[in-house]
Image (tube, rainbow, N blue to C red; front, side, top):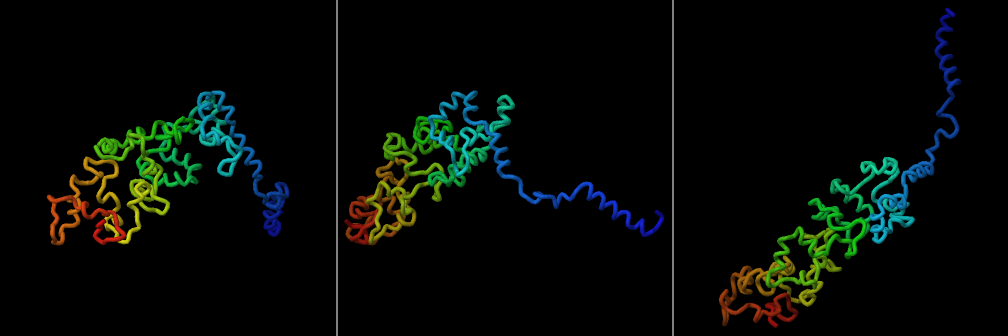
Length: 306
């Protein structure tokens, strides 16, 4: 045992014996295979208890949910993956049930940060052309979430709103509500048009979340098509600044929803130098549009005579 050669070989022999006793895990059959995905999926699915289980405690909510478009989350597939009814939005409920209804063990929409609500809703709704811009919308930037305006489980109103659209919009937009009380206004409160006819509450790429026509023109032309053109002779402010260079969008104290009481006062804001002629124009003579009648554009006259 005192042989120096034997002593040098001893560590190597001990390591060899250890490998023989413990085996070679890295070389054992199947060690290099990935975990069985079917087993992982089965374990994950086991966490979902199903909507019928939810109904046992939340019967009223389930009945409302059953009558809503969101009930489609009970279909076999949603977003290309397995659907789980209530749990498609609230997350798996196994821990919640096992905890005797412990609310901390399941996702609830009340009391959470706005971005969490948005993320849940947009998981399905980001594919909808009407709703996909919500993340970059003014509403989202100001902490307004989907459930601020919509009833998640059920609503008998159009688009699952929590109340009629006009009162709902006015509950935040008090200044615009006051505009619609003015003598000349778009007839929103009368029910002729709605806020959503001009604005997309979920966001657009335009300012003020304005809609546009299919060819990306101003939304005003959807109703006022006779002002649209194209014209041979264009009125430059319309093309450059839009209708609101002369008109207010919601309501005005002045006829035609103009920005000023007199048409001349408005025209002279741009046309400060009027050519001399048989009747030089000023703020005290007849309205400009008595002669320049095609003020939105003309196909026959460069100064918009009829």
